[in-house]
Length: 529
Image (cartoon, rainbow, N blue to C red):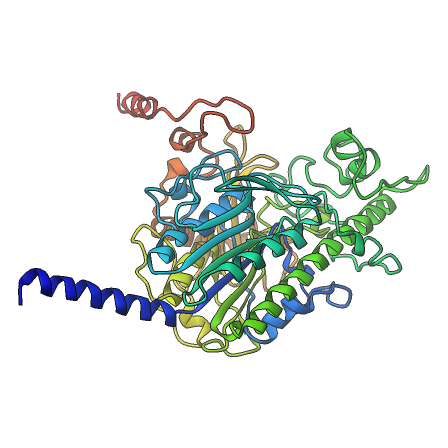
């Protein structure tokens, strides 16, 4: 037999083995909402557990595992989404804020890796990451920015399409259509991304009167006065439920429309003359929480539709089903809405996962994981190679009840955008250290003892009794910075990282100058003189 014939047979056999291997691989359904607080999921047993209605997400937790310490590494939509796709921190993905482009031709991507391993891949719903980053997806129908709650439009390979209806329903419709048309002999990786529960919190018409007759429980820190935290951590007046005189106060937006423009889409509040600030805050919180929870109800119903389809197809138990969010959200905690600051409610991501072939039902796992780990975990389940440039760790062993190859001592967090001081730090199981850098380069710290102060109301950074803990966490922060390969110039509070990002030629209608590496080199020479 000729060598060429032997090579041909070898190639054919390899192809057959690859196809058989792909057929045995589990499907992966990754469901992600926007700004979904874990407190508003029943399974997380928060102060809202008796009013929130999430039976389908709760089912995933009951029949699988719930992660109690899953954290984002940058509590903002685009950076978190870039991290989930690439398995890289912001300083490696190049996405620090909402402005930068992510281009994945020369970067790792979970979609590229799974597609190369024989998976059919699709991204449907809110994408919100600029740049050439859909490499590896066979199909996509996405909103490039926020997208609309009603009658949403999607970008596809064939051009723009528009659907009539409510966004959570439509995103699920398109997901089910793709699932129905897929090659059912091959595994799939589907990213279904809901717009909800991002502001301005417009629910489906069928849920407009949900919660009308009840009072939503208030969070413990709704009336936090910030007297015992570092003022750099809660500086400014953005994202306050009620802040007299602030254009960023939700109470003002509910009266006159966002930042004084137009009317609020779910109706406005008229406060009685002479009402106290405390009562205004209480009433504003009630409207916000109810609108938010109504959006969550729409998400949960559509998670149920996806589960029902997989069950009908006989694929439910052969599919790894994840429900998560791109980060957390304040629903009144610390008197806030939005995310950004490094308090728990923004940092913590809900994460429930169901796969009965490996994951024992009813688990509540307290190991620390973060969104850098998602990509490698999915690739581990697919039994395919993990790109060297990915920076996370698969937590598949943890979900199986086994000891992982790497058990995180802490999770790094860095925030670069507007709305608060630049800050970074670490979160361990029992403590959190946050370092703030002001515009004048002033530095401040928050140290929270999460075991004894779970609501993060008392800063211990300047307390001599806790100096040993502060020093230990500072040392751990330095160690973790080495682990994730981040140098000082890429940390929040510096300007150097801006020299290496891609803003694109025309982003959100504005021209931006691209990074100039020569400028960076020039600065280095000057410093060396």
